[in-house]
Image (cartoon, rainbow, N blue to C red; front, top):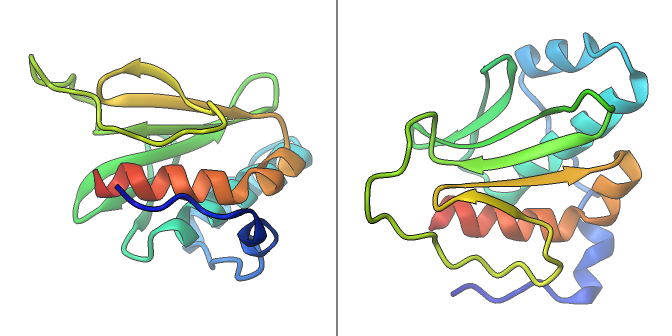
Length: 145
């Protein structure tokens, strides 16, 4: 298992904001609520910075991320303006007998929806920035599991 991030890393998580592909930027710009758009952009930047091999694209009408062609993360805006992060293995259900990977989630940010799917909800851009290191840690563990 990977080592958890240490507290002194928390201030550095957003300093090297990742450039997002043009289709994702356009989708974010189309979000009617500017606060939700800013939070979604921040979350996408955190996801991209978590694992340099992630490829960003629009899938399911949302910013989504793949690793070596495998769907692993999708983000989006909820109806109430909060932001969601979904860790998943694509649209298909898990195979019978599949086990949930061991993910170290010391802040209990993930809500598990199955052995192959977890959801995180962040209220706004401030919450994304405050949790950036933890989100990077969870995404990194997930995509490498």
